[in-house]
Image 1 (cartoon, rainbow, N blue to C red):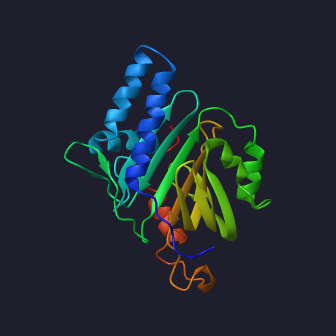
Image 2 (cartoon, helix red, strand yellow; image 1 turned 45 degrees about the horizontal axis):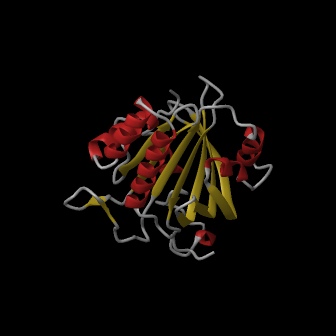
Length: 235
């Protein structure tokens, strides 16, 4: 796999969010249809996006340099949030515009499943190192193709315990793709047994992960602790 990250357009995520909520609205009638239309309009409002993302992540202040891209609650299914270091741009008519992709872009995807997962044990096995295949995430339309597991670790933060796996991987959704240094995180909360997963991607360090120099990258434990410390997802 090439070491450069193929970054996703922030505007593409917004477009995906609009399509999802409008599809949900079209699937039913009345108030839910209105909810779908209202949510689609919110994606164009950075204040509304920030409020939705902050609520899902339990954050009043996002990590420095990150923009709220998508905050979506699918009733009875999942909560989904996306942050990137690429600021979305809109034209005069409020339409999302394609932006120049940056090899230095970082992105964070968070998913909270609202129902117990049948494959919860497989996910546990992945974070514990018994297997190296997180294919259980395919159920949320997030496919992680791991080229190399660099290391595993665990952190105790004020609001939760986080287990993480640093990898070189390709991350794909139905419409988007990126590759590079990818950190998968399991958020362990004592309040319930729901599955919460984060995927943090960024460029590989100069010299590649083989150099062992992860300082300043999403694979650096100091960076992981500081980044995750902005969130309080156990709610």
